[in-house]
Image (cartoon, rainbow, N blue to C red; front, side, top):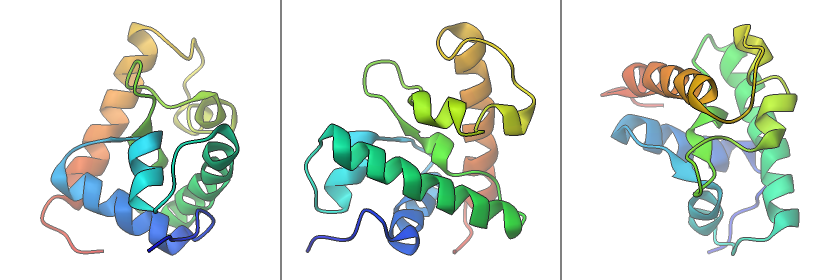
Length: 121
């Protein structure tokens, strides 16, 4: 069954499951879970939905989930996460790649993993 890339409830469910299991997902993996193959337009559409998911999470007092979606090449979120507020929401100013970026992403992922460990959505 193919789920809508634009359905924040469906996307959130997959991200919460990943956080509960303590692992990140690549863009390709998340698109596959939603029943879609990877393409740049689908990835861009998914990024819009990830922003919706994170805004709703913040309103509920939950940690960010979009940081769990990463590039296969380096395990970091794509440019959209960095420019749409993912980094600035956490007072990070710096490069989108490299050790400092990886440290921020790892810290935020650990927060999400700890929050969702043993918790139901």
